[in-house]
Length: 442
Image (tube, rainbow, N blue to C red; front, side, top):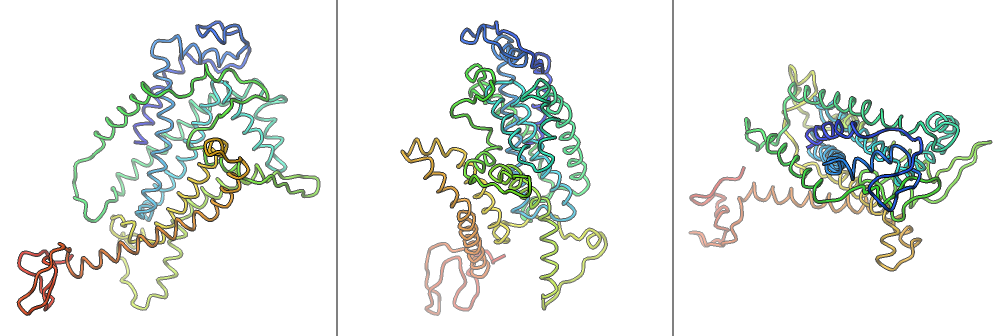
C-alpha cells in the first residue's frame, strides 16, 4: 500500500506541477468562482483555483494526490505497528525497521509541505504554527525563523522553498528508502508466520489494484481541501473549525491540552507550552521507535545470563547476524511488547481525539476547559489501562492455546467412556488417550 500510493503521488504530482505556480506575488483573482472574484490573492492560490475549477480533471487529480498522501502515511504507520507486534524488527531486519521509522516523518513532512503550497487559509495557519514552534527553540529559534521566512512573516520565499522540498527533496529521499527496503527484502527474504505456506503466491498485484481503485474512488466521491471555501491566506486569520490532516492530529491535540508553562533561564524564556508538545514529544517518540530493537536485544541478553537452563549457541550465519528463523511472533506470545504497542496506540489516539476538544465540547454541551482537563489526565492514565488490558488478554489467549495443546480442541459434546469417566468427544479418555478420529494436540 505504501509503495503503490507513493507511485500515485509521483504520477499525480507530475500532472499538478504543470499548472501550479509557486509564487507569492499578489494578483487579483479573475477566475470562474464568483465569490472570490476581484479579491487580492497570491499566484500560488490563483493557480490552484484555476487547476481545481477550470482544468479538465484537475480537481480529480488534486484530490487523488491528497488522498494518496493520507493513505501513504497510514500504510507506513500500520507497517510499523505490524512489525512491532510480530517482532519483525529483529536482526537482520533492523535496517528495514529504521527505514520505515524514517519514512513516517518524511511522509508527514511531505504532506505538511504540500498543504502549505495552495496559500489558502489552512496554509496560513500551518505557517503560523511552524513559526511558533521555531520561535520556541532556545538560542537558534529566532535565526531559524529569519532564515526560513525572511525579515517579515510570512514573506515571499516560504512557498518556493516548500515547493522544491515537496516535489524534489522529500520524494527523492522516500524513493531511495523504498528502493533500499526492496533490496533488503530480496536479500533477507520476507518474514512470515510459522504456519504460513512457503512459496505462496504474492499478493502484490491484488494490493496494487485495490490501492489504486480505492484512491480513485476517494478522489471521485469524497471532497478534500476545498480551498475555494477556505479562501486565501491572511495575516492573523484562520478558518473556524480547521484541523490538520490525520497524521498531524496528535501534535495538534498535544498543543491544545498542554498547560501554558514557561521557564526562564537567565535572559531566555522557554515556552514549554509549544516546545514540549511540538518538539519534545515527537522527538522522544521517534527516538524510542528507532532504538527499540537495540534496547530489546540488550534486555533479552541480560535476561539470558540468568537463564538457568541455558540455550544452544547459534552457528554460522545465524551467529554472525544474531538471528533465528525468519518467522514472526504471534502477538499473544509477546504479551509485554503487545501491551506496549497498545499503550502507544492509546496515547496517540487520545492525543488525536484531544485535537477535537472544541468539537467534543460543542456536541456534548460541555465546557472546553472540562474536556481539556479530561484529556490531560486521560493521556497519562489511558496508556497504562490499555497496557494492562492487552497484557491480560494475551495471557488469557496463551492459556487457552496451552489447554488446547494438552487436551485437544473442545467440541462441547460430553460422552461417557468405557470405564465410566466423562470426557469431551474431541478430548482424551480416562487414560489420557485420544479417541479414535481425534486430532492429536500440536
